[in-house]
Amino acid sequence: GKSANPAAGDKKLSPGFLQMGTETLRQSVASLVTMRRPDVRALSLSLLYGSNPLPAPPPANANQPDGSQEAFGGEGGGSALSTQVAEATFEQAGFEQAAKEAEASASAVEEAEAKAEKAYFESMYRYTDDGRRLSAVSRYSQDYWTTNLLDFFRSRVFTRIRGHLLVNVLMCALLALVKQFWTTMPRMTGLTHAITGSFLGLLVAFQAQTGYQRFWEARQAWGEVQKRVRSLARLVAAYVQGKEEVVVHVIRLLSAYPYVLKQHLRGESNAAEIATFLTEDEIAQLDNVDNRPLSIMTSLSIALAPLINDNSTETGARHNLVWQQMDGHIQMLMNAAGITERLATTPIPLSYSRHTSRFLSIWTFTLPFVLVHIMDPIAAMVGQFFICWALLGTEMVGHMIEEPFGGDGQNQTEYLPLLRYCKSIERDIAEVQRVRWGYKPKALTPEGSAGEELEEQQVF
Image (cartoon, rainbow, N blue to C red; front, side, top):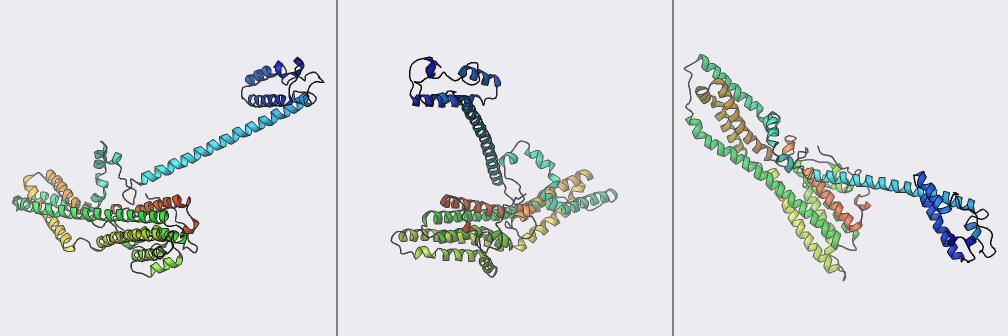
């Protein structure tokens, strides 16, 4: 503009004002020349400098302050401004590239977080170790009954009783064939089965109900384990100050305890699962004891002993109170472990299971003697199949869930998902660590451990 050019008038401009105008001009050019549209760049330069791409040098003026010629394109001014424009363009391009990389990085982080969150919430719907899900959308949708019907012959209950079903249907078919040639074949009126059927139904239903009660009691016991371990980790991380070695030791023992209890209930021994938390000496000590959960709880009580022996005037009273609360949680944790041991070591009485099985087998084997006399052969076989499937299937469900912890290598799909419970507790304890320390301390992976940190296992 005219006011910015000293040659247009006799007014003298201060060096500071000229420097500010030069900087504004440089920023304008640097921002406009980086635009992708050539017409916009040309129009911007034309508006700023007229028809020339760079401003023409003003005439010499003795009253002009030193340095103003170079600033507005005097001797060497055009070259200097071109250099500034090029540098600004390069700098702006670098900013754009950095912004794109930052945006891509942020997008990748968001995608990873979304995947992790999705995987976490999907895992919350798993109710068995084989990955079957307890999802309200899939279990209670309108078309779910069609899925049940289509999977009838592939169900786990059916595969377990199909041998017994086949024998009963073949028995019915054989009797129907014999009746075609032996018209005077002895027959049963059905009164016997009508009278005994009610007793048989009560026995089968009672066995299924007993199995479910054991299953649910086991789940409640593990819920108590989860609750007490979380409370212990929270108390030691929040209220124990000045004794980092105690906090770290307690956290390690609490992280290992669910895996030790799982292995104890299933009769397993897997050092890799606890090598992340315990040292080789601690694992060797566990191998020499009969009750590994009890050994972990004893070590936990010993680790908390410094709190009750703290005579400090500042933290002693608080640590004593924390010890009392944590000792109460340890007692409840031992009670929950006792419940799980009781369920694992006390199955349903064998005489009851055998009597029910024998009663049911005799009842179904003799049922065709009734059906073949009151139905045609095809209808008799269909009726025999349906009745046997209902009774034998209900009995099998009771057998499948009466041992909720498993350990025999069969029926794995019906066991409680103890591995998922252990992983859930481990994640919760890791969250407590992050709240206290801001990260997972390296000390939680002890030196001399028996193996590398156990990777997250995907259960399918």
